[in-house]
Image 1: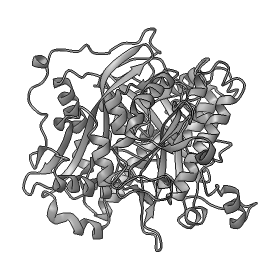
Image 2: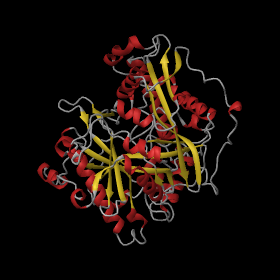
Image 3: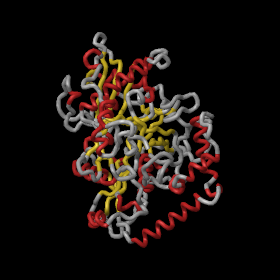
Image 4: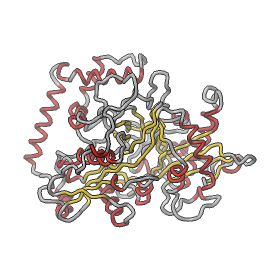
Length: 552
């Protein structure tokens, strides 16, 4: 485990506990809000029976000879390694793969409940469900040409009725402009969304974050789908989609970005997740949208790319205290704090032209973003309204100032800064990051982990001839993201997170980011394309250069 291995990976779903009982105390707290028969049994005999069945199934795959592990699974792993790494991995052979798989929960991998390198177990449906969907299946060869799997069709030919739910539940659109409904969604996610495997941390999205993430230009209310208990209207499940324009190599797709799939912990056995996925797909199809982008921390059919989380520790004392990281055996806490200390003031503030992004910067930032992102295999196309929304609308309440980097605004979600040439007034660089805290579960002293996540950035340096080869791009990115770390530290963030995508590999190591345990798999729905370079190069495409999309 890495020094920051307690951090959970970002995902569209939540802990998968559909076949396990919960403790009696937690069950008693919510029994009166759920339909009769929804609460899992806590009988010890039933638990033993379930564990016995699971153990037999696992043993049938793990023991007694190599034929107990499906050859198809071995082939999939081998093909994946060879596709992403070529011949650079000398131990990539059948015997090695089999030995590695023997040490894993093979049944969970096959069913999509856990992933190779991932930690969370998510309620996103088994491979049996995904085998019925228009997604590339495990074991398929990379396509010779990009294209859809199932053709689009007119809305009149799309299923007109919602998919049926169990009789005790009803569909509901969640109106995020209504404070009461926004609070209901916040309550659901705060108690039931993504956790790490040992239940130490759980994402804690703010109300401001949810509005910012789910109401971009062109958002559609029918794409904010909830499930309620019919008897008392309690919100117990949710899934969302927002419209996006995603460029995948040479193709521009008018698609949806699917996120925030969450089912109440007491209802995981109801198999609501696949129904939510089918219903949001139907709603998108009715609007003429037949492709989607989503991310999951587990292996499903079939990732187009995989990125790895990296973490830059800022508040070392707190992170050690809550078990997010640990002090290496060859180091003291004081030494670790000293090594990770960042300057008190951004270096580009006084002489580099650094300032907070403003409304007047939108045209230049949109132009720089567009030119910079074309360097990656998959990225989102933003118009000026979308740039305004993603980089400015989440700044919170209150006036800005020259020293705004020292104190966040009330309700601030996103931090956006530009570099302006003082003579020409040209915007040459920008960087952004956003706030996504986590609840610290059961800790006697700390209750919230304040985490910043690197969002989008761009620099004119990347567009100069030879800038990557001679190190100019690396140097410039270290200056920009180095100042982002300083601003995050002054804003009282505990940790700064980033994925192995875009140009991040240029600066992660030298800026003292540590490798995390979490992997994030990128998926395209109803679209085939060859693998894109994420945490590893693909062919002659370097690490990260395949992915230019940051999922919230």
